[in-house]
Every structure is written in structure tokens, then in C-alpha cells.
Image 1 (tube, rainbow, N blue to C red):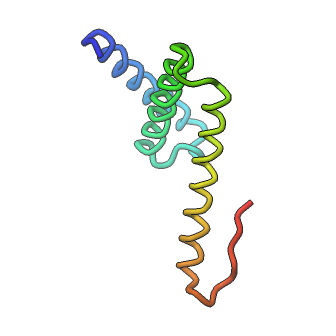
Image 2: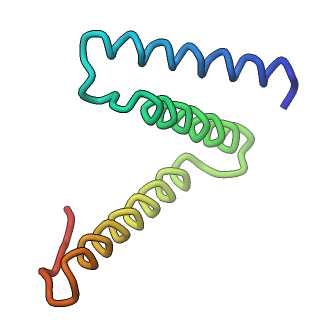
Length: 98
């Protein structure tokens, strides 16, 4: 990454942070705590940029990308199901998130 691109990236993240802070003035429900929201936004930008580059360079297809997204989302669901089951113990309910 060039220094110019790094500076552009940091400037854009700062702008996102400012946008989050501004929105918090009238609606805080999806931005609490603020630093977590900025982290989520920057991760979405990072992931989107990587996917775009890989697709544009022909390394992966858009279909492969969306399949991988679905696969990983399903893995995340499994992790939450396991976490909830562990919270309630082995005799707890069979948890299925849908």
C-alpha cells in the first residue's frame, strides 16, 4: 500500500467516524458504543475492497464470493448456536437459529 493510499484510507475512516458521530446526534440505537460501530464500518469497507479487487482481477468470481459469504455466515450461526447451548448446559434446549 502506498503512503498516499494509506493516508486516503485513514482519512476515509475518519470521515466514517465523523458520520457515525453525527448520526449519533439524532439516533444512537445502531451506534452504541461508537468505537464498535466505526470498527464494523471499516471492516465492511476492507472486506468490500478486497472482494472487488479479487473479482476485478479475475482471481475469484462474484458467485464464488457470495458462496463463501454464505458459507462463513452459516459457520457464524453454528458458533452462536453452540455458544447458546453451552450457556444453558448439556441438558438445555436444542438451539437452532434461523
